[in-house]
Length: 139
Picture 1 (spheres, rainbow, N blue to C red):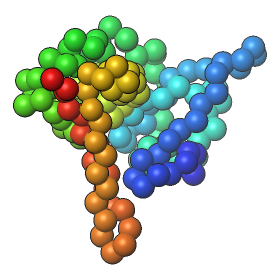
Picture 2 (cartoon, rainbow, N blue to C red; picture 1 turned 45 degrees about the horizontal axis):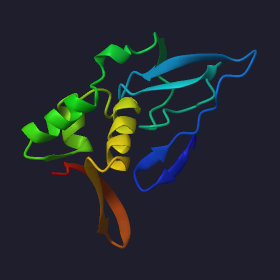
Picture 3 (cartoon, helix red, strand yellow; picture 1 turned 30 degrees about the vertical axis):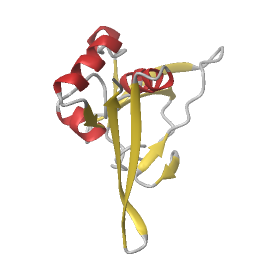
């Protein structure tokens, strides 16, 4: 496994670029997620969906396509004040489900007390089968 598994979420540890290492963005052709990693790629399977190696190098994802904090708060407001990661992924909010920048902005908003994060684990047969993360705006 390429990362540390916590329930159904895989945490990928990447290193900062050091002198002599080439870094590039990779995209899984199965799940569409993008991550930054060194060249050559060290994964035998997608670190997110576990698909066999079916990756392609992609250009740096455009940061201009990502929502700023105001857009994230407006999105939550337009969705009754809260939304789950799955809902944001389906509606293609920023890079949710494909990258980490939008989630990092949500975490920063939580640190500032502007949104709240709730994590719910669903158990079946004594093991966690699903994790739901809900972000809510704080009035």
